[in-house]
Length: 247
Image (tube, rainbow, N blue to C red; front, side):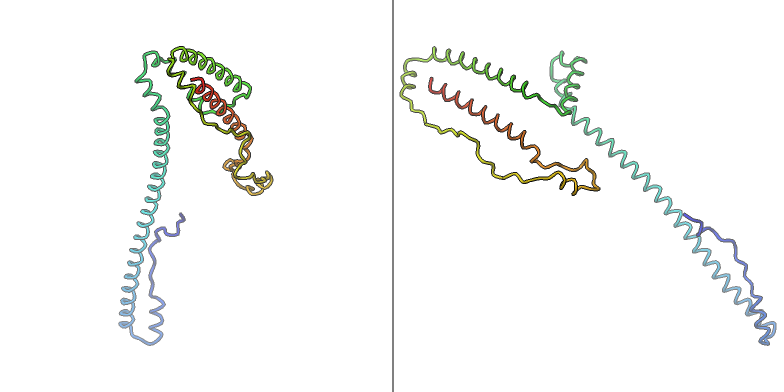
């Protein structure tokens, strides 16, 4: 703040001009002295009131500065406590399950090496993981082959333990004919043409880190995933139908 409201030095009051004017009008000395006395009394009263108002204003300005300082300190305290609370809550929410598992698990899981491995695994889960399509397909094919071998082994054991009455009933069991689709259904919503230039033009001057790309850019991956899900579903249904007929 500026020093516009700083205390002012005492004002010098003079009635010399008033005295000269009264004498010029022909008034005697007694009347002039009385007029000077009245004028000085009024001026002193007004001066005292002005000084009182100035002191009150100074007190209010000091109080305002104090409140402003307290407000700034309070805001800093609130921001600091909020950050600490959020960090504390994030740590508790992230590692509460981990520590609960360690407390209820075996002694081997509570070793420092195991705990560090679990913490590294959790930190790795936060990062984006990219899978190779060939590795994924090879793993899935191995899993499917192992499942088929397990089904064949279990089916042979089950067939050996079935009695004549159940096999006789299975021969006369009629299974419903299910028509399988030979192509994927058409999408309900057609893809709209999206231009990258229009997206850039609409977001000029904005924070690009908060701009979300349209979901249509992820459609090739979604279509591939949907195709594999349909193939796996049809494979499981075919196996279930074959084993149902054998039983």
